[in-house]
Image 1 (cartoon, one colour):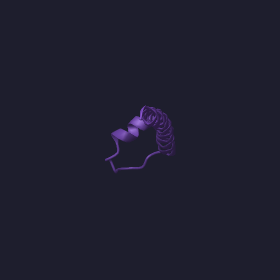
Image 2: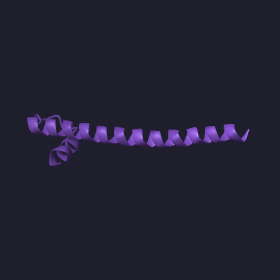
Image 3: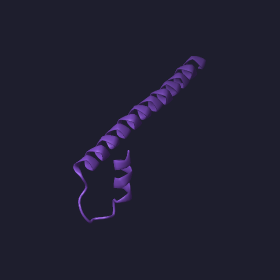
Length: 63
């Protein structure tokens, strides 16, 4: 986690180069965070879609 924070602290510092481990840990954390957010987004979207489909079906039966 220190590699990720170090990259964020030095993102405007263009002197020198990042070590290979800093780059790959930053990449790894970004991939993990992206997958986690994608899964959460899919679950939330699935829940909201199931509620909206129930509302539509209930309205059809009431008419």
